Length: 87
Image (cartoon, rainbow, N blue to C red; front, side):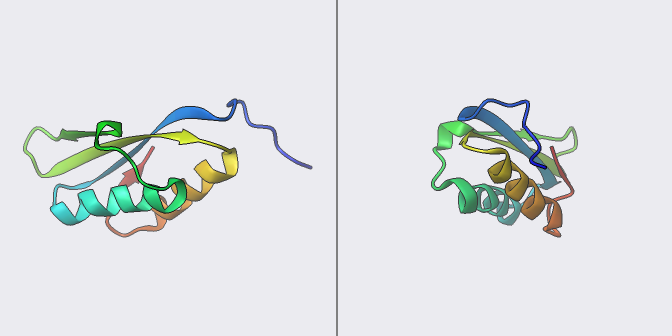
């Protein structure tokens, strides 16, 4: 039985990952998304530092083409040791 998505594709979809604020994490977060959607423009990436600057949330807005694509991105992000949380 196939599960229908409540999301209508294609659509703009924000993917948020949180981790320690390092240049490596920023590259990892972008790379995890680009692996599934191709190159992402700088304008599609929003970075927000924590109050003390130790952590960062990175939101990458992509044109999602399917629920499977989103599931794959979240699966890879959640499995990565440097990603503390993926939303």
